[in-house]
Amino acid sequence: MLALAVALNLAGLIVFKYAGFLAENLNVLLEPLGVQVPVVHLALPLGISFFTFHAISYLVDVYRGRARANGRLEEIAVYITMFPQLVAGPIVRYSTIAHRIRERRTTVGRVSAGLRIFVIGLSWKVLIADEVAPLATMVFDQTTAPNFFTAWIGVLAYALQIYFDFGGYSNMAIGLALAMGLKFPRNFRLPYGALSITDFWRKWHMSLSSWFRDYVYIPLGGNRHGHLHTALNLWTVFLLCGLWHGASWTFVIWGAHHGAFLVLERTRFGKALAAGPKVVSHLYVLLVVLFGWVWFRALGLPQAMDIFAGMIGLNGFGPLAPGLLVALQPLTIAVMILAWPLAMYGLPTLPAGPLSPNMRRLAYGACDSLIMLVLFVLSFITVGASNYSPFLYFRF
Image (cartoon, rainbow, N blue to C red; front, side, top):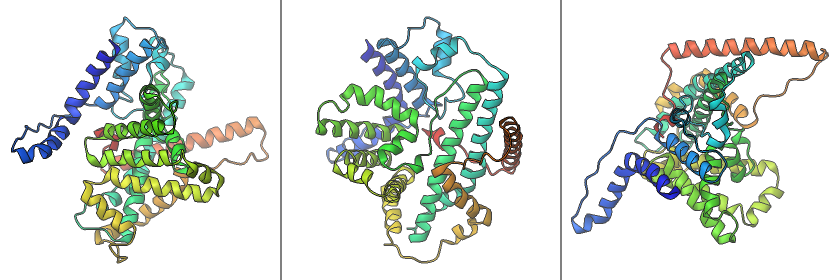
């Protein structure tokens, strides 16, 4: 019965998200026979990738005994369609939030903390992600092959855009939920500061990584049946992870790209990487992730190959594209320079200073409130100036 229930939930996801993709690829195989099947691209229901995973989480958690079956339909509906995270996560396990749905408690402290997290997320999205987004768009949406400098600026900008866009939404969802008396899991933990791809996936979209680990990887056997079986399980999980993000071969290759390096790190290469200088490990992770983002963002396989060619210098080292020169305003350059250390290392810890603990707490609290107010006002003004662009993960 569990398999049937899971299959029924996946059926809706497959029909709406992958029917057109499957039909197009089937037509390629059937073309020599002169047979074609109709290709239908259906409108994607809002948040289908996320609420499908929520429904499966409920079924599996109840089946495994980690949560009790809930006879109240309204509580199950609230869990599956929780609006703060419905369209872009984080993915919340039913077993971790069932009791909070039933007995929500909202306090002034939680509302205050939630609004703070929300403002941080809003500022990430509006002040950083949207500021660098035009650079990525100009490189990835152009028809000509970019040269070395143009390609790298576009890829670096997109890496910042997707982190601060998706991370910003996650923080906004976590903050809203906390203000409403719910607790969502943290979704990011400075992933660009990781020292291996394995470590990167412990810090990037953590709710998705742990979902695939517990509901796909471990049921497949995990790492319990030898190196070959473990490698196959890892690759299977990341192929599915890529496909979950979108019905396109570029997403599948992106998943295979990360899966390949995860498998590689389970060999002697992983031990050598851990024993080597941290700067080498860090550079390795950034290169793997940045080259992976090309697959993720490219409009198709030919464009991805053009950008790769540009990144390794095969398209020359000429001047930047004219549109990119216009977009590289002083503010945008400053945001790019400041955002990378923030993405890799976070904010620096302030020194204790000579103040007493109570005075220090008051001073830090006042500064924090002032900073949140400034960030909110700047974000509000920026959104009002029509510089806002939709969240990237809304389309997944």
